[in-house]
Image 1: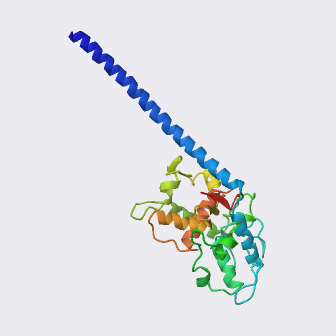
Image 2: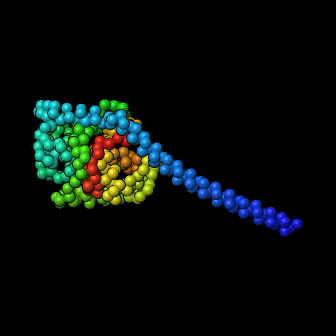
Image 3: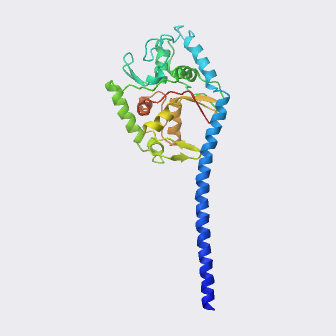
Amino acid sequence: MKRKLSCAAALTLATGVVLAVSTTTAVYAQAASTQESTSDGIAEYREMLGEGGNPAELIEMTGEELWAEKRGPKNASLEQCELGQGPGVVKNAYAHLPRYFDDAGRVMDLESRLVYCMVTLQGMSEKEVTKKPFSGSGDYSTDLEALVGYVVGQSRGTLLAVPQEHPQEKAAFERGKQIFFFRGGPYDFACASCHSVDGQRIRLQDLPNLTESGPARAAYTSWPAYRVSQGALRSMQWRLNDCFRQQRMPHLKYGSQASIDLLVFLAANANGGEMAAPGLKR
């Protein structure tokens, strides 16, 4: 009797093991399938959004009008603004920013350069220009956002070629690299915590490894972007500011040297990528 019970127990145990293995395999398969289906769903969502056109194009048109409009105390346009390719040349300019500018004596990104031109050419106050650089969700774009959209759009299809020749450009890259890997804040986070490892994700959002050229190119060249959930065009300064907010780090001042240095590091890592911005994000 005992022998029969032992055989039955053994059979039950074996059956349980088989079921456990099968269940575990099914769970892992389902998890992998879910991850793949989620990624596919996000890709399909973005494709559907793009079918109706990118709302950023309307903002670009507003920016083009602002570029040519005479404004400010000097009643001047921005048509003589030097973005690195010659006075007033907008075509392909963004693909070569940030860079060093002789007249300012420092490295500047697009947004800090636009502010510089609005102050020097149009006579506007830097304090007033930068008082509210970002629009609220669903609001009309700010002047800076519209100008960014226009200039960025003129580099579509151009290969990113951020210069690293001037000593200050090289120094900015090194400082940006230090900022990228610096850990701080209540969570002891760094930019690198999310963006220096392959295959990471937060909720439904893939986190590209920005230290590798492939994913860095794909990510950087799609920004600035129109964020559908906010109904707004979001610039690179906004993108950095929002990342710092999520890390619970101190507020990143608009156009600060730290923000520009970080952009130099990110952009130089993405050199060679084809510009596709303004992009379209969730």
